[in-house]
Image 1 (spheres, helix red, strand yellow):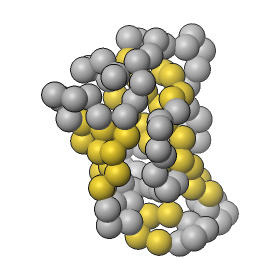
Image 2 (cartoon, rainbow, N blue to C red; image 1 turned 90 degrees about the horizontal axis):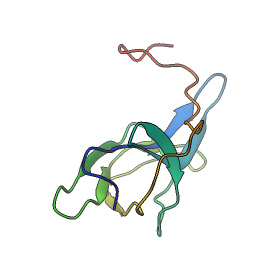
Image 3 (tube, rainbow, N blue to C red; image 1 turned 45 degrees about the vertical axis):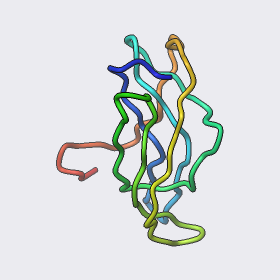
Length: 103
């Protein structure tokens, strides 16, 4: 399981012009990012909520939207992250981000 102080980044979208949704999972732990494979990956999406079970270490995703096919998600998906070590130089591709959600 991922360390207790880890952060999960799952999915996202790049929407200029049109939209591409992502279904990759990244964990920040031990001072670095690592792309992880999960035994069962949920549908690619963005605008989902994520919580972590402190007792078991699994992450839970709820809701979100996706394109191709366009849909709203109304389910809870469990992601189990394997034990990991940071990969030097690895990081997710952040294309545009601000606290206000504007690019």
